[in-house]
Length: 420
Ligand code: LLP
Image (cartoon, rainbow, N blue to C red; front, side):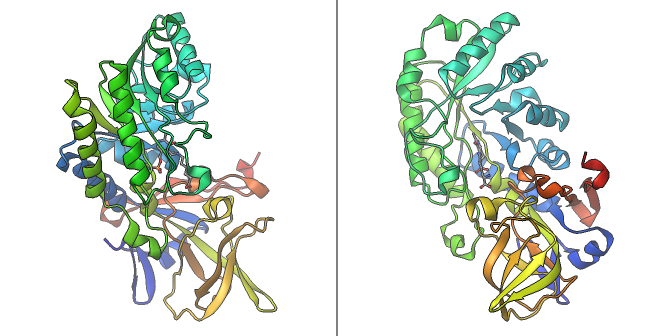
């Protein structure tokens, strides 16, 4: 599906004319598409079913985009949630996701958050435990509350995926997950298990993965350790991490959903199901693959600044609104809203007082003038959720194109009165 295309030389997103929209709403703003979001989720879910995976549960990684309206759309389609804070837990519940479809990840769960989760009416699918110290706290907290907690070990499989080092999580030097020996050593010790029950095992080795070799190795390790612990596991959780093609050069590398599901099905069959009587279901924690392509960021050109042979196109969106280029040097396509020949090399920069506040260097674009619109593509994941008020700028508006091209404000822009 082509989510972006020109009609009468004007850029449309999910069939909405961006220029007319920007006349009604102050830029910059995020614009999302319900159709793309739903299709991405359904493609993932159908892929898992078609590969014959056992009773798949898709837990949307809320950190990628916790907007309530978007999470509600996914909840209605059957999605669960992968959460990492009490805030995300509250949001998931408000969006209609029941506790039994929620996995609680993260290395720094606080006692307050554990209490909040344990006091819910239903049980979480699991606390995905990242250290023995955490497991001991969950056990002690459950004991105090006279409850029992469902827990899952997040295995650190000691693999190195090909991705940016800031979002690689599967190796010994990373703070995430437990090493095999620590998992095995905990078994049978009362201080961990008097008020907890081990119901699953998980891995998550990193994000924006386009090469699945490390993923395969991690899944094999997951099966090996899951067999060794000899617990009646209800699920195996494969984490998230599936990448998207931000750059056209990445399109040919993009793992297809059906291939990804096949890899999981074959690995689990060979390394787990064929060796065990257990039939644990498969849990997923995708974020980016579901929501990245469902959003764009619309900005207006404030002015051009020419310094010898450098042309800076200064836009009204900044790194506080969308951090990925400044934080990871990530590429996102910049597309003019009025169709014209790309004839000028320029740097598209924001108003923030940091040199890294740059959405693209040496990009070929049409000559752009004050008031012209430009979009940054594929900003649905890790966009608004990583934004801030840096430079005391208000957070931008979020808009949704609902089914039948109806528009809805799903988060208002902050104005000066909100900046207290
Ligand atoms: N599960 C766990 C335990 C995670 O830590 C993450 C992401 C996910 C699932 C979802 O991963 P995804 O399917 O979205 O790749 N801010 C970075 C990405 C950080 C990812 C953190 N963890 C970025 O903008 O690239």
